[in-house]
Length: 252
Image 1 (cartoon, rainbow, N blue to C red):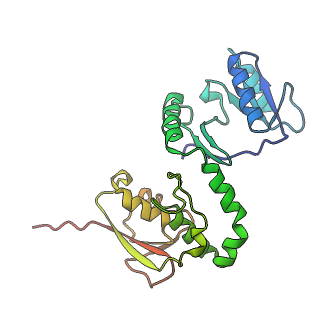
Image 2: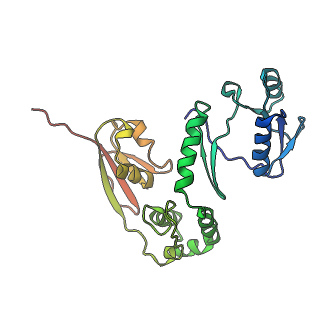
Image 3: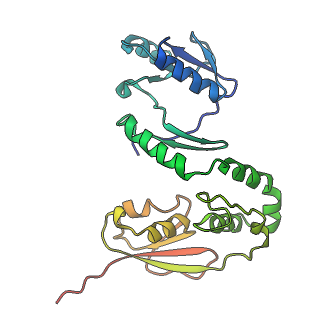
């Protein structure tokens, strides 16, 4: 990754805004929509600053010297952080960034995702949060809860985030997912050559079993908290075990 995407809680916090043109007003609306308080001068509690000036170099340098993280409108080389294109289904927020390389690409992706994500998706997140105690009672083990939610949110599941007919009560009626083992045979070292099914298995794996020759770029497609086992097999265990092997090419 070229940068670390994070979500900052701005509610009630001061954010410095330098500038008074249309671009600055757009940043003002963004800050206020996130609950931040726009201020026009640095202060001891100010940590973030937005600069919207025709010649921003001097102002940006001074603010950085004062210890603030600075975003300079349309000048990614001067930015400590960039602002992504946003799909807002609060509390679900999808952020698309290109590190300042192309705002147009980020916007195009946002427009596609806007059409794909139902307006009520945020209500699903709220329902899951409200059912947290019931989920803990139904699935006492944290890994079991995660597997149940993964199954529910898979394509066509009761809580498929790309659907619109969500059935949260089905979580409490379903039987626990059985242990499963699947094998992925790599066709190349390029992660873009993974099939959609392979990518989904990697994203859901509880354990990842692989040989020394499997490229890191492939392993990076798995969940970061999945258990990694170097080898070609693993003992049976609850959840989903994904074995990753390189394709063997027969030679005549």
